[in-house]
Length: 640
Image 1: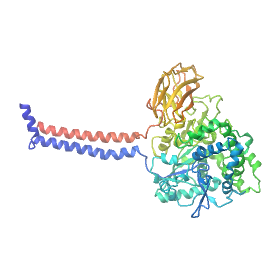
Image 2: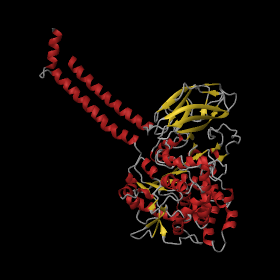
Image 3: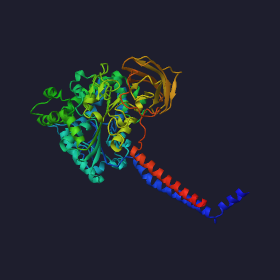
Image 4: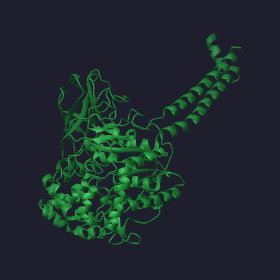
């Protein structure tokens, strides 16, 4: 009864103790509110980009739409081509719908398909350049101020199709009104278009009110950005990410000119086409009806009939010929008098810019611009060369790294800059500490690769990734993780690409947007067995943890893991993914730090920077301490 009376007194509004309890609640509430008011801006700022700096996307080869009379009120699209009276608006549309239909109509005959594509001739005539490397007709990209080419404006006008870099634009962690598309005349030499880029940067700064910009340069655009640095410096560029940049050209151009050596790798060509679709299902109805042998013959004919004669007068084409082949091919294809202007521009590229690319990039870094290069590797070139490449550009050109072809002896070194497959030595890269490699990733597929996409955003806007060793979640070497890859795999407790005896679990993740049925897992060149209980179904994004049997090798050893699976599309497709790993002996440690959750095979969301996390903890902790002091004071008064 006494306790009850005491409790009743506490509930009496006139009681001083009741008043103190009310005051305590107010103090605690105020402390919590203050703590969140202080901590919330820090937390929001830490989980989003550091600051919204405008981003300019510099596209790759043929990545800008060209028009006849682009300055008129009624410009006419001439590139990409207009077929059957309709403008082709994407590579996926051309390769996934139009070309398969033409092949079917022509009965698979390569000559007939090329003849039916004869309607391309007027379009090709429209984009032809004359002997001095200038347009025969008034053609070029649309004209306007940079504000006209903001991503939000292009979308509002229904002109997003004018750029083939929509996936990259939509993947960036900034509002669309901070993204600008640079539309250049990709036929011209970089020594000409670098000036256009400089003007565009000035307009972006004027429109946005910022004094510096960030840049994403893709493929051919990466070489253009290096040319820009050479001609204009980097004063106005805060950060730049170069994706599969053609810095020192591509051996593919040599294959095109010397077409007798041009032989398509048809199996990889089909997968390459699939990587350019916006969704896995888009090509499915047509994709599996194409005979790869027919496709190879058709593409060779198209290259010989249309591309090779056209490219001779493109200054840009001569820019991306590797310098070691330039003197011979210039002698073979260019007349010193008729093509004097093309030669003069190409000589600048090959004598001043390409040989000094590494110096240009390092000088740019020294002047305060943060640079990074992302590149695919582990694939042969489309034209038949076995050079280690991303299928379009060889690795030594995109990154400067030493690279060996599949089947060759690996580099005999345990440096952390040697890839797990042993075929890439990044110590010789243009930027050894700022170059990331994606084994098996096709040319320019960063926007479709979950891990590479997150890395790009952190490099442009974050503060946790400053070099290849600064954030262990993003090691220098990684397997490709695009939906087209189907499956990803990693050994638990190991960095991607490595296997040690400490692990007895293989983590397999479905990268596809559809269910995948895992059929078998085979290990080649290594004693490793993964017994499956039967067919295993993985939902999109699901990870399976599979036990395996293996012994640690006596010495470092490369081996190939082959995953056989069915992608459960409307028409199920049986596929295989091969991943290269390095097995380490028991006495050898991983060459790079290990730091990620066992379940995680692809990149995690942006995380809080350690310093900011500490600030949040201190702020919240301090506020709770104040609340505790307030409670202590109230109860002390009560006791007194």
